[in-house]
Image 1 (cartoon, rainbow, N blue to C red):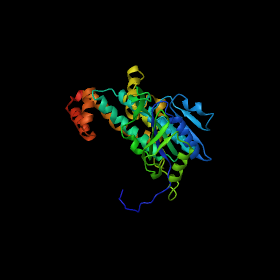
Image 2 (cartoon, rainbow, N blue to C red):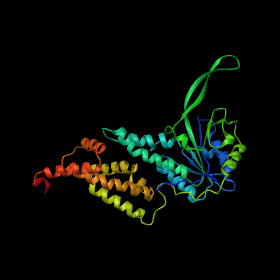
Image 3 (cartoon, rainbow, N blue to C red):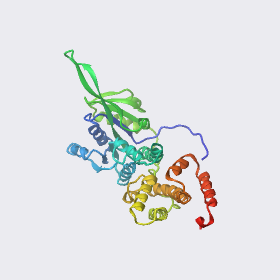
Image 4 (cartoon, rainbow, N blue to C red):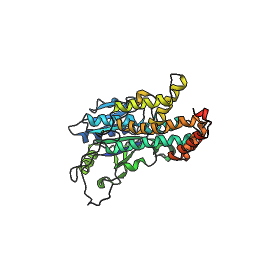
Length: 355
């Protein structure tokens, strides 16, 4: 794409906010309070990872909820897509920490990699999923408020009687380091329910310390977001929106099945285990049911890698390449060089073995 220069202009925008704090700091309550004001005549949708805890506030706020029990990044993207499709004004992700450290979250996906270079291989597969999740949060055409749990520690403080007493405090958010830089507004909540703005692009909130934040905070945010020219049309979420020349989802799923049958044929326990491992490696999913929920764009990307590498892996096995050698050479060599190596080994085989 050719580079171009244009005059910078401020445009109206949707909120991208992170609320960080320990358990009991009031992250969910504050997010709902802000969402109620920002939504205006619209509605808010909570993506709840906390076993229905947000619904305990349904008597104080009017909102809808999607409750997740697994925290694969794609689940979050699907929920954000539903928020867009049903016309919600605000999406609350409560909490985004589960996408990092929860079941089927990024760290869990990394841990599932099984090889002599499991750490490197795990991150090679998981990092693109994390990037898609971040892109989805930033591109969603709704206000996004994400809560993040913070790691806990205790500090000693002197009380009014002159005695030292322990106090629980929150430290770094439980998510990938540096994620907070992606948001326009980042605020920390402590156990006294005091909100401290640690990062903001809104000048009116720079360095703000707000005990028990209320609707006035939302109004200040809304005033800042409303400044400038009308916002340009948003891009579809990553993996969503299908170009006319892209195969439809059903066709891609059938193509994936065909490759799986080619490289792991049969109905033995070993073949089924192999197919499940391939779904995990190329799509970050534990089974076919989860693969079917992925959007066409992500399916197409994973299918391209599966179709490229696994038939070559099958050829490698037929010329005696062990699993360990395959993993090592794949990590070290580009596809073309590895294909050439396997072709040379095929040619070196006796004619009867090739036949």
